[in-house]
Image (cartoon, rainbow, N blue to C red; front, side, top):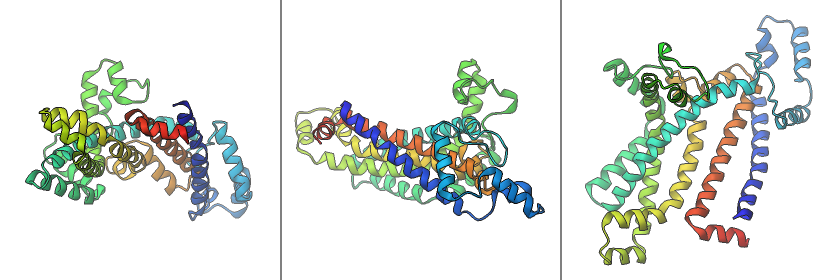
Length: 338
């Protein structure tokens, strides 16, 4: 198991290095001059050139990349061109909001997608199966921006059950201890603030979790159907075991590997794809911050944000790999033999 873990961790280094190269290269292909953006359109050429020199933008791209990588390895992502604040500080302030949103959306997707997928597989060919598959097709086809606006018009503006934007009512705000609002409300013992934060979280999490829910339900159905055809499952039915025991102990456990794979991938998608959702619901998270940074040509903020999302993504996939080895020992043994 130690060797298996070591090899998986070793793969993180080239992955993150590749992401850093892509993030640095792509942001420098975006039209516009950060120095010109900072000084304004009326700034003279001399002032722009001096600022470019001060920021190191007049250096060759390989030199700029090496400086960025060296500083990043030392934990320094530089200062935001737009706000002049440290990028690491701004990310630390905004990442908890995105993480809470992504986790809430994933809980909705897994909590509904897995049971619906199992139910559709068990009732294959019936109206339940048709309803689940039709619903998943509709869910994966709906644009997030359209669904988000529809939820706001219906449940916020229309019936007033949920707030329009933000993470919490300003009058119910609690001191930030961890940065994670739900945790901070619990630490402060403020159940009213916790309830209000959950109301603010509900609609953006539902909008963001719709596509992963559809994907997870379809993958679960496919994986469960495959396992249901195996001999040991038929033996379990022949022994007279209850449907609940057969599905939970024999079927779902052995169908988890592909389900875990898609859950890990969808979590990465949720972190990186929350930009639209955060913009619609004015959610003060990392995605909205990255969008504003791209518009401002703030390449330092964009590079730092992309690296953070990539780091979380590869760590999540590492955890998924380790869960593979726990669920199916054959994967661990194959990796050790290699």
